[in-house]
Length: 151
Image (cartoon, rainbow, N blue to C red):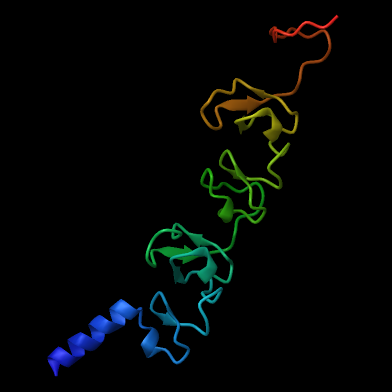
């Protein structure tokens, strides 16, 4: 009997328990009606498409180590490059933004001019988010030479 119980448990682990569920869908140790968008917030997940909220925090590449949660609103902090974390789908320099272009206010980190509301990212290097959005100088202000000559 012990051998049969061990075998059933081993099969359950290998098949993900799907044979135990009437629906045939076991997602992170819970029977669900189908495989997509069934896990509520605070439930365990492995991928974004398992969650009702469509966001699995720290779980996109792990086996049931993530937690379903709501996507973050604009202005909230986000993991750099994790666009799935934001409702808008845009995580720029650690914050959820409404749009990918011209959305970062002055005095916040940036990577390129087209990210800044002012359209000027001062001090940018090849490293992501190494610059700072700044207002443009008015006519007559001191600026560095850009190598262009206009007649």
